[in-house]
Image 1 (cartoon, rainbow, N blue to C red):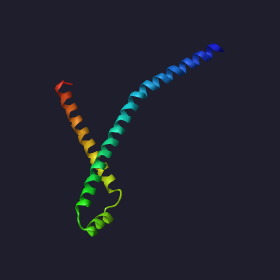
Image 2 (spheres, rainbow, N blue to C red):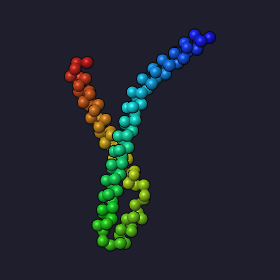
Image 3 (tube, one colour):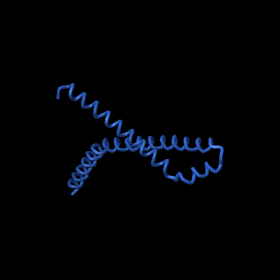
Image 4 (cartoon, helix red, strand yellow):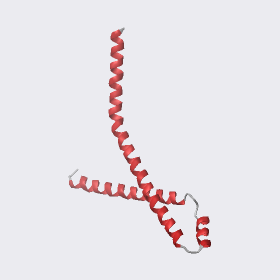
Length: 109
């Protein structure tokens, strides 16, 4: 009975090790990509929020500043920052696939 227990524990251990090695590489890449996109969106959000705040403080008339604040919904800066980060990510993806394609053709494959 001990032999079967040792065998199954060893089998499950090797199976677990295989899945950790196989999924570990892919999971680390996905986590890095999510972190990059989150950081990019946060940077754009900060920049857009700073620009909006600077424009609001530059306007000397309070009624115009209040009208801009009323017409500008709360989540617009978040939406704009996500759109900008998605556009930059797509641009980076297009450039990388273009250069990989050039390398692939130049290698004669």
